[in-house]
Length: 110
Length: 116
Image (cartoon, rainbow over all chains, first blue to last red):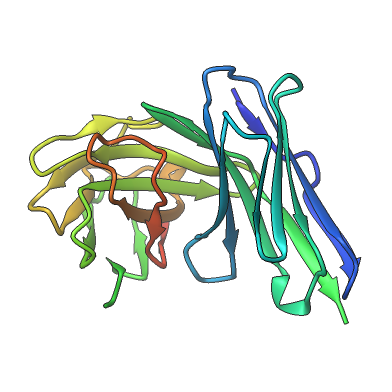
């Protein structure tokens, strides 16, 4: 069962515009959420995270929003840059488990 | 600092053969993890280790064994490889002292395994 879902396999945006990547989860026990970025032939790298006690966390151009009642989180990238083109994985965890979504491939066009 | 290193980068096996994937980290991290990534599936946890000498099953442990040789090294063994184990395998480590999943995980570059 896929407890973490990223329903958009791909997203294409213009340089300078906002990228919004979405993620839904089903397990209400998850209390920590992370976004990882992955370039081809490399391992995932940590991007940003949020605890369930918060609804927003910012780090430079990256902001993650959490809506616990809807079991939904999103990653906003503003402004988007060509170097942001990668696969983005959302992950949800509790003390004993971590589940990843299938990823969204973001393409930022110059 | 090399971070997390994995060997080999690529491997082709025949069904029934065995092999060990090696992973090492130089960040003095307590916890280490093995994941597999399949198309359309994201990463799935195979096994993890909260400390030297301890290991726990993840979401998809069947067909695999692990050894936490010391604090630096965590190996994944396929005793009798099957085509369903064709995947990209990632090792990761984190500072977590309790084997939890709320600390940032640092990933290696992956091993691409094909089982014919």
